[in-house]
Image (cartoon, rainbow, N blue to C red; front, side, top):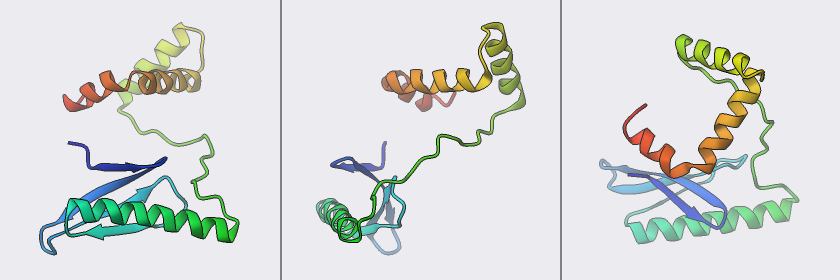
Length: 123
């Protein structure tokens, strides 16, 4: 199950509070915290759409870029044996570990269906 909504080019993570009996979500990939809620799926979707439209309008009014800025660098924590195997593979193929990871991410994003299946069996 994928607890994600999409509207335009924006995604939101969705959760349910059984205590409050309400769905709630948060817009992903932006620099600000934009949340929304609804007591039904229909209300939740409308609240998400309204939240995105309001956020985009606010950004336009402020002259602000709505999307999160990514630097292109991040830390990855993996088991030591996987790190060793990746570093060895990269060296044997005369590429840097960085280029190997970049290629692996690129490959995974081009083969999303296969990768999603792998996540379902917990690689």
